[in-house]
Image 1 (cartoon, rainbow, N blue to C red):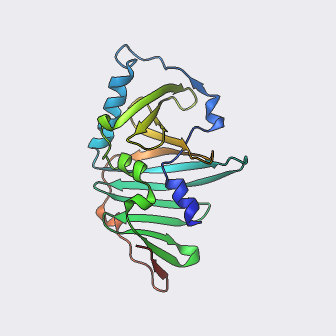
Image 2 (cartoon, rainbow, N blue to C red; image 1 turned 30 degrees about the horizontal axis):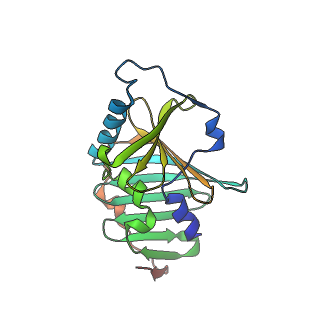
Image 3 (cartoon, one colour; image 1 turned 120 degrees about the vertical axis):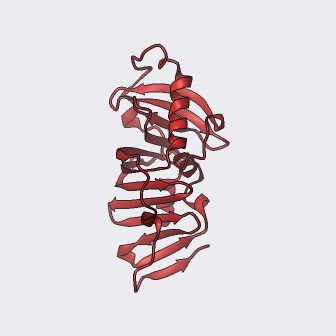
Length: 218
């Protein structure tokens, strides 16, 4: 299951077949917004400037064999390098990083793992959400308009990572992240109910409950 969750967090999320039918080329914006550069640059800069945020998420994995699996929960980011991925469905599961130690906790298994570093969770998505990706780091490959979600989507390459689709609403908020992996599995995460006030630092600390088996994978 750990491998599946790491793949879920692995940045993350390609173009899903369900969404492809809802794509149009561009939305109707004023002349300035119709230039992809300024809108995209402002959106990335806004994300980089945030001290932290907290959102609900819905995540859909679509596998090459036609199967799907859905997840939901909450994600919180506090810069630098502190994060909390709390899965509520299909069952409780938690990833917490305090900037130096990463915990993976599964209450049903009564097990907590110490992971090695941030890269084990996901280098690209965490750098993006943590504000460590600048406009200069991003190459835009394509752009489209999703009429269902009313978002502008950009296919980008960040450094030497695989291509990823980023979806921004009219306010410039990042609300969709998608990619396909080498096996043809697509992973799509949609953010909602976001608060752009930095969460409390207490949210990013974790102490294994009494009786929990602790496995050190560092």
